[in-house]
Image (cartoon, rainbow, N blue to C red; front, top):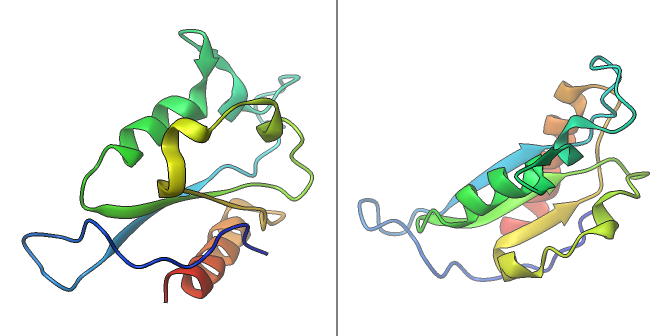
Amino acid sequence: MAQARRRQPEHGNPYNPGMSYYALVPAAGSGARMGGAQPKQYLSLLGQPLIRHTLRTLCAVPTLEAVFVVLSREDAEWDRYDWSEFGDRLVTLRCGGETRAESVCNGLRAMQEWAF
C-alpha cells in the first residue's frame, strides 16, 4: 500500500518533546466535478502543478516529520514530475479510494503502518 519506509523522527516539536506531527494530503481525485481534462491537483499554477505549491509549503514546516500524499492507484500523472526536492519528507501513498473520505481513511491507515 505505502511506497515508503519507516524512519525515526528527526524534527520533533520543541513545544511538545516526544510528539511527532504529520500531514496528510488527499490527492486521489480525478477532477470529475470540475469537468476538466486533468485532475485539479495537476493544473498549472506559476508553471508548476498546483499540488507542488501545497507540498512545498507543508514540507517546509519544521515540526512536521513527514508529509503524506494519497494518490489513486491509477494516477499516471504523478510520475511525470520530479518530486526529489522534498526528499524523505514526502511520502507517496497509492491507496486512494472511491470518495475523498475513503481516500483519507486509507491514507490514515497507511500512515499508521509507516509512522508507528
